[in-house]
Image (cartoon, rainbow, N blue to C red; front, side):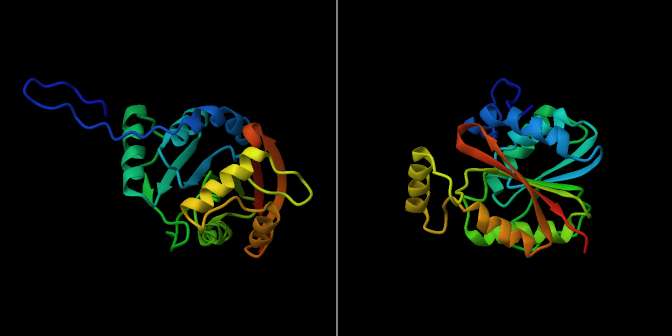
Length: 213
């Protein structure tokens, strides 16, 4: 247990678990969609797993799927490992270090999930995500993206505009992306845009499928 066991004369073990409040708000809505979209069995690669709370929740809800969390940040990897240790789920795999914009390991993947990364990373990370998905997914395999997006002809919520300005003030390479730009970049990697689903709190789910080679 990452909370540690008190031993007289020793400090309690450090709790490396991170907490992402948004996870509690969106995990059930996301799981409801994944229930109809994920394969019955296989390996789901989660890119940019962050705290690891989503990975635990989804591994619990989809026991016939092996869940592979990843993140480029060592502190996030430590958090994922701590949550994984607490959950003790046989289908939740040890986290791997993965930079979406870098080289991806050649591994078996049946579906790929990425939550709240596209807007909090450089555009190169999204291009790397799409490139990796295009290379690893089997024909018909799912790439699922979740987060805030802009859409041509659709008014953007004021809260999302403020969030976008905040992101760009923190790092000019960040920002809420346009759905149309993501769809075009995905098509270049053999990923067909399947559909868009509106989600709570002005977020969207974007579903892509790997086309025939």
